[in-house]
Length: 230
Picture 1 (cartoon, rainbow, N blue to C red):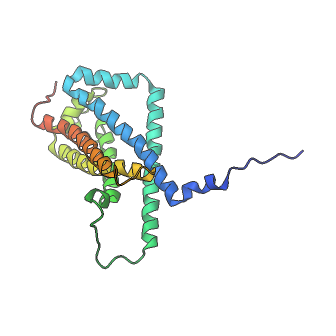
Picture 2: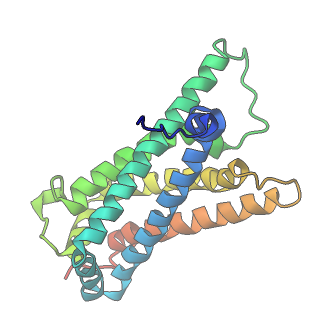
Picture 3: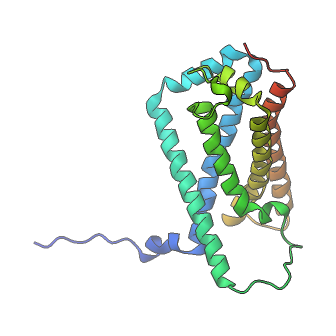
């Protein structure tokens, strides 16, 4: 008796190879990463409630290692797929037009969209540094890293002004990346219309700015002495 092979529709197998498929991958992974950014900011803002509040929050996360590692693996996969789809789309765009314009015309594109491809890698480089600095303590300024004391590590890290400056620049780039990415998700998923696209862009800009301001406020508060070491 011969086994019957189960085949999937060719369209579903080849969807990811299309431009629309890659844009869909970027959109879905972008939504996942956006959720992480919002959750991460909500956790970080607890620093304004004092060391106990922030350290208790970090301890709560460590109490569920299975859930924590599942989230980390999902985020890593999302980052990889997001970068991969962006790179392949960029290469495809370059190959479609191997000879560049004599003069670039950018009237119909925003600064955020024109910086999308290089702001992403810079933000990724910052995330790697941020993990080495505040999660693993491998590059913490002055070797003052204290295991499981998140509050002290954040304060001593941001007291070193070059780290704060790098963080602020990265958050500005993240703001630009989020602004373009948020409204592009709606466009990719087919929710684009002249009537409400303008409002989607405005809301995306507001959300991106609020996230950037929230993140930037922490190193600024440390440097200004508003958030002090224990």
